[in-house]
Length: 404
Image (cartoon, rainbow, N blue to C red; front, side, top):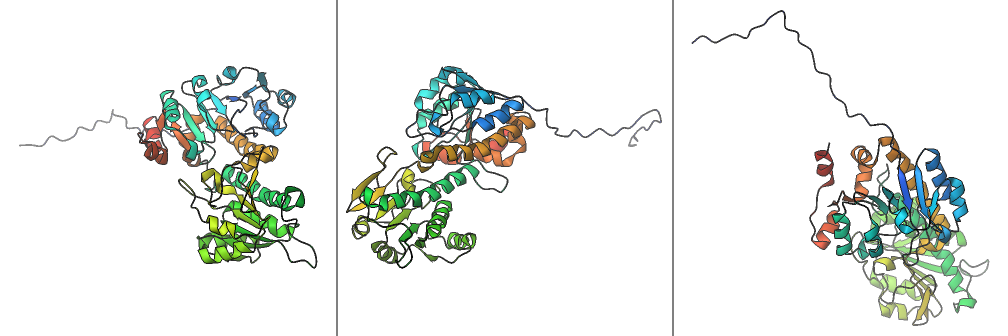
């Protein structure tokens, strides 16, 4: 059987097809809403008047609730002069397609949320509730969390900034409570010539521990740092540029050092769930009367057995003659600095989102942004939350690819 040959005719024309490239669309105009926070102890605001001014000058719209910035000592006038539209009703602010909050979404916010809204806020995983998450999923919300947002270096810029503030602040707080006026030991943090320096114990060599060590050394204190991660201890030494006393977390050594210190700081971090309880009540009872404990990790349970949550209004209590300071949101006590730090990260991000052509386009092009997304159009994309609440997990990368 003869095989038919292909017919080639000189009248045919053969042309290569053009390759279709993924081209970013033109910049999108954003409408951003900033509500007044009613959450406990939250004084920060996510965008300062200066940042709002930059967004307005780039053609975006910002709607703000009356007195939203007063916790950070920013007036309505500051924002109106920057070009923001001020409203009295919270409902009006929640009509904005993009909501920027400095506190997590709470139950009272749920009825006000719009379908397909984008929310940029903290989530406080340890305090998150299943019902709230499910209601946000029903409204097809896209959620971007402060805690998991990454920058180009792969670090978490907002968490780091808040940790830097907390680390620097706790030594100033400790110095205040060591004073006689607060029934402290009556010693000056750091000491002076001819008097042995104040002894500070720091448990945890992360960002909080590093900045607490920096501040304590600058004040002239003697610092000893504990952490079970030897890499973090090495990094601390290298970042400081000086050799400080360090040790892994060995209970007998820790108990011995706590007996003779004036200040003990709990700055241990935990990736998931509760922080480990490292200092027993027996160890606390053996500490010097009038010494100060500052438990920065209290928002995840605390690492001292005697720790319990306090507020900025009543920050301390005494157990075994030892002053305990256990305020969970230390950065909010320095709200203006904290607001500027958050705003410095979010304002450029919002401009990038606009330039990319909107949030969906930005997610497609920016892998670091994907890491911060825990909800995408109502789909739960955070594996830890799905495991904790037994909710369906959807891989964000697959979700985005399916919509292209």
